Length: 339
Image (cartoon, rainbow, N blue to C red; front, side, top):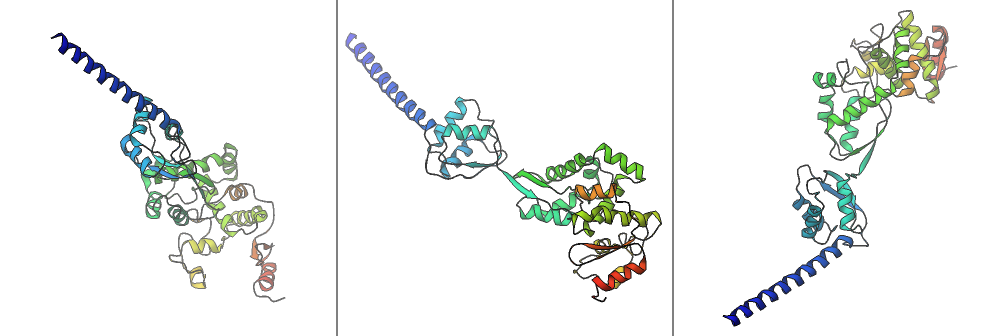
């Protein structure tokens, strides 16, 4: 019996020794893994975590893509730090030259890659939607639908039939996967920051609602080729509105034409639409584009002039006239090349 006990104790000691040696071996390997990049020569590449993905899937994908050398050790690392449920979805720029510990830190901090999207002044809802689709964000059809959704528009605090005019042109940075509502809300929020209390008070002083100012600003935006002319063009429209004279703006006519082919014709000018300012007095029913801050400012603070007409000089600038006679001379000179 004593001999058997000695054998049992010896076997247990051997097993403990083997276990301790194995534990020390794996601990050493694990400690080495934490600090050692999988590929020190690797360049940064995109890595995606989809919403709802678990730690095991993320770790396996990291190993498959060559960012780490062992997904099991990475899982242990995340669990040891009690972070397995805190990895954030999104697109990341990772490199195999990062240590696993650094990669985990990036994922935990949500350091997602942001994509630059520039929306120029004067684009319509449709044109803006196409930019976001081309940049790999929302479908244009969904973007356009939301911009005409009454409940969504109301949730943004906008009192208008569509969001035309309210999608502020600017350069934005979004992570991939940003939903369409968030994108649109960001553009509208940017406009709200631009419309200062001073500007809103100025609109009231002029006798306009902010919606009407944005509508006028959108026309100024589409008519302007040279930024310095915005306040002068604004003065022409203000002067016409004061005497109940039609604005006669070609861009408003174009906006009301479905499938416009690029050539404005007399039939277009003579066809009544809610936007045809050749056929109606006053402003059209709403904005015809999304104006920038300078055009909104010009609508609020026009130059003081007696001009009622302007014609393109075909060099991005215009010739401004006080009388129809003077205007007709300018048309002959700049449009018909007749002196």
